[in-house]
Image (cartoon, rainbow, N blue to C red; front, side, top):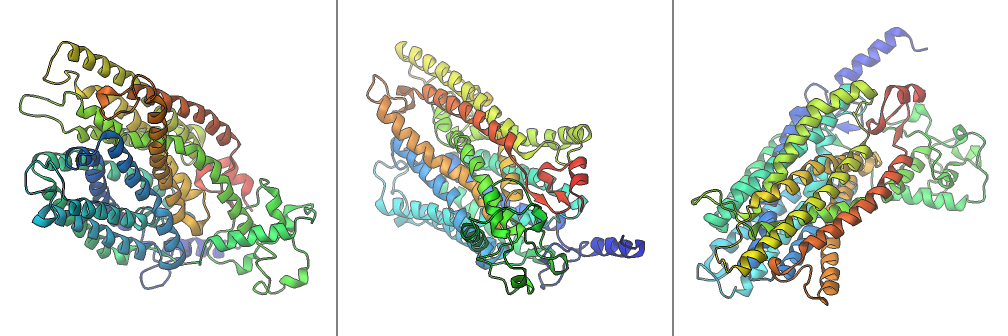
Length: 592
């Protein structure tokens, strides 16, 4: 038993220093009192707010710009928006890999933010420089080709910038909290909620203030505001450098995974040991600050990579061949990666629904009565603010009311398990698409009646009829999106956390691509009948049928997700279960 004096000394040392394999900006072990936690993460959340303001300020009104300024039809514009959104949210896979392998998260955030700023600057130039403007008239009949080229070049510069910015910034912020410190671990759970409140505030201002500026003052002024805001927050982010905790690079995270697979295949004919404790692990005396994972019974074939064939071959821990013998921790890391694949696949239909909020929902709003009074009207893209407000309110209630209560009832540190949170969000998305289908059917019937009556003032149905579908999806995002962020950060190997956030973003990105693909298929099939579900004009379409299709697909997908969630085994660290599924009984069972 550890002497009481040494135990007190060790606990005192842990309160002063952070021993989680991170360093301060000078390369030393960080002081707990002067680095990390909220003092560091608030700098990070500030630049996230700026980036989301820019992203949603552009993305939410992009379909209107493509149809009204560039004169693209609805199908072409929806595809272009989905392609851009897809690229923007798939690029993080590349940026995250580069950060985890070569540059580190701080450096990648800084470089990608500068690329993002270049895109915004180019977009601003295309609105101010006469030869790059759409045309010389206020209303363009024919847009200059050079403007289209510069416009899309600027937008894809922003995509590249997002590729390094999004996965690394969020994971860099979460790195400021020590998983081995109980208080900091709880604060990290609140960090993801605060992160999404800042995101929602950026979304809200982006789809209200920035869209209003775009529609009523000009895209040039809006682009200039976004460029200046991004420049200021990049400087702010850099100023916080002394307060950050930085993770040391461990090389390519894919190499150890490949080594485990090769070793397991080489030893495929060996028998399993009678006790998992006989599998190879780094001796505790040689353990680095990195955490060791506990053995699990899933995917037992991979355990063969940790079977010791010749004890003499590992007398010197550095001398063994990692392509022939892997530690239990490395084996469990590969199991983690394989385990997230089914969850990732069942998240994709959710991503398809999210894609509708920036495409078809906006076109619905544009075809409705957006007037609040005779003098005031709501820009169609501003309707996205309904979702932002609902998400902010739901997160606040969840964080301040539900979580404390559920913690007391269940003893679970997190309140509810991550996958339960995601499942609740998915169920709400199904409900949201059903409501969207009902509202759209009502809108179409009113539009047809008024067309027969020969009314020319436009549809009388208020745009506020869209508030329920936006609100339900916003609340669903408060559960599912944040749950997915936590899941892909917590349930991947520690060395792959930027890639983990990139996997989360790829759900939205691939969801956008799948939405485009689905729109193409639906348009092709339904176009053979009397009326295409998604035609050139929303009033001549049957978008309500498309929403019913999405509701059915997501309902079926939810059943599969629930089945997988019930059988899922969460990440286990030696001595405790990571907060994803941490309760008092589990901690007691896993205490060494």
